[in-house]
Amino acid sequence: LNIKKKKKKVLVSNAALIFQYIATAFTALMLTPRIISFAGVADYGFIVVILSIGTYVSIWINQSVPYKAVRDIALSMNPMEEMKCIKTINSLKFKNLLMTLPIVFATVMVASNERSMLILCGLVVTGVSTTISTSWVLQGKGKFKLLSVISICASLITLLCGFNVTNLPMWLDAQSWSILILLMPQIVTALVTFTIVKLQYKDTICNEDDAAKSVGYIAALKEDFPFLFSQLISGVYTSGGVIFVYYLAGDFDSGIFAGVDRLTNAAIGAMALIGVASYPILSKMIQSNYKKYVKLTKEVLSIYMIASLAVGSLAIICSDTISKFLFHGKVLSEAVQVIQGGCLWIQFGLLGPLLTNHLTL
Image 1 (cartoon, rainbow, N blue to C red):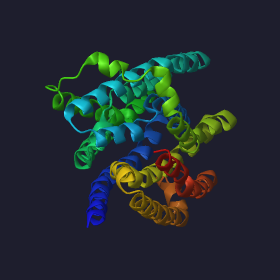
Image 2 (image 1 turned 135 degrees about the vertical axis):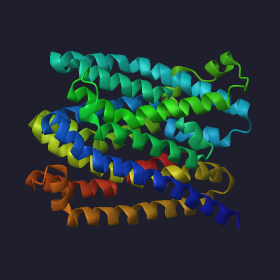
Image 3 (image 1 turned 45 degrees about the vertical axis):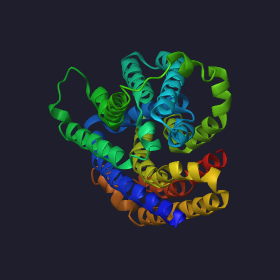
Image 4 (image 1 turned 90 degrees about the vertical axis):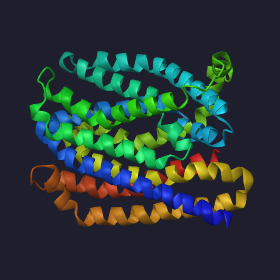
């Protein structure tokens, strides 16, 4: 009976996240052609290169937060323990943010002068929003419905800005507005979750020194290395592709790749929701009943494989239509090839990290 309740909770959590994914996917689907049309294929390619570098900045700042920190919140017995965990993680994330500054300035230095501020804007906004985001706290407490509402609202705000981009104040150029609009969901989610958690724990007392000293920075980096390594490997094939294409072929070809890649990553993100929704429950189950944990993990991975096969097959069948939708009615041979190749990434892009993150528990 207990395992049935846990399975039901996984299904309810996934149902909430499905609505979130629909909003996120719809935003990417409608916004990508709009931004390509507004900024141009070449500039869009460069913007996504910046966002891809920002992904590695976020991975470094978060490290084990999407998994280990979520587990710690899920296993906390009282608000004081939760507050200590929050303060500890926030302290580590802030230190990680400071460690990314050399990467940010090095990237700016090697760029051309006219694009240096664009890079600085994109990377700084990404780093700060990742640092202040506390969506992991709500995830650990199983508040997936609330997270879904926040995500849907962020998507609606992004769509509103995206479809009115030509009416926005011109104190920023098209490229700067484009990168801010693409970062809008992350910015809104970070600000809202930070405010919610701040208000929720405003009366909770926690010794600042105990939280700060609970784990040393170097020790935390060593402990988090398996999670960090797993996420960096995942980042190679979810964010690294456009960087390599830009380096080898330039702006325009990276723009073609990036347009298709946005949709591919949206599909991979949908697959990731399956693991995210089940993780807090699996974290508790691993200590109480390992056999049931293994059984439920296999079921989660099976759902992932079936869903990714279905999405990949549909993308192959509709590759010409997708190309026309993204690039002003044109069927670009390069785009069709990227779409077909992207179906393999949908299938395998998160299977390895999902397995390794569960095994690292």
